Length: 389
Ligand code: F0G
Image 1 (cartoon, rainbow, N blue to C red):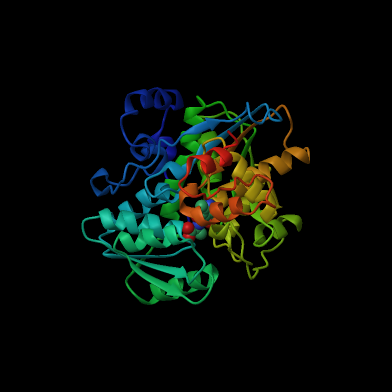
Image 2 (cartoon, rainbow, N blue to C red):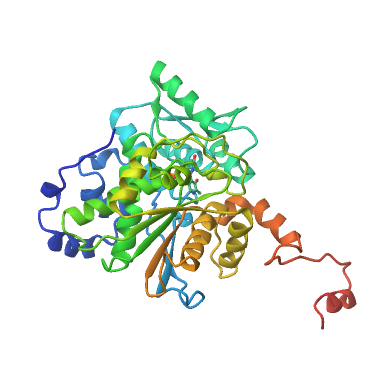
């Protein structure tokens, strides 16, 4: 299922709509773009944690192999991931419908966001199903601290997802994974806000990591709608990036999207996208075809080395975001992205959610960008020697 709005009635004149945004900069992003995202949601039902207005970092001076490369840092949202963009829509809609119990399966970030937004709603309990032992400690802490009923399931994400569907078929509990199309409407804001920041100048590429394939579907739907109602006059291309350990969309892409063969996803440092049976597969394929998209994979070494290089710029990113950065670099080397092109990479979560992964990387001198620490006794001479003074 998907949500379709009567956008031509909501936005009869694209230029008037663009001009009207100037007076809405004090509003939260969801309200500013609401006539595109969710015109029918009553404002009184809104549950927000002031998500959005995330930075778009221009890192072209560090990577001159592109005409321009910008990083849209969705990790700078209230629960440190892009999931807040979908949850403002999802939890507000649940609130509007009077749902008292909401649930999701998660690799860590959806659960953190859902629990926080449900916690902030007047009368809502969150339940989260997590693949036991497969998410970071920081991600685990988030739903617990937000008061959600947190259940570890001895399976992987795909197993949790199946259970959530069985449970919500049987009980009056509202499902808030991105297979609930309302979430997708909120996530459209990422692409729309990026283009607004670019003064509606459309880049040649958007590069994005893919797990359950909801975010690439949302990005595509939002950009497609902008094009269809005349707010932009050019289409970017989309690149969806996975890891070699969990690459069902890539395998399907190689076969001309003939079919999805679900995989048993293998462990990866990009644990949030360790998904073998993406729920939004069909929506993602539609967008990839519409935007002349490509799909590629990266290795564990590639993603961790690119994470370290972006972290060093002061932009702290998670391994899943690094998958997209590594993918952009790989596509540039392969000549699929050209030197004269403008690229936007979507960073999906903050590095602080994966501190252990960073610490382990930097401990190991075999890693190309390792920044090893030293421990010394409390003595000036030792300190001078450690600092080569
Ligand atoms: N990046 C991060 C940080 C994620 O948490 C996810 C998905 C993705 C990328 C991929 O997005 O699934 O829409 O293709 N995390 C989900 C979760 C599955 O449960 O938090 P997608």
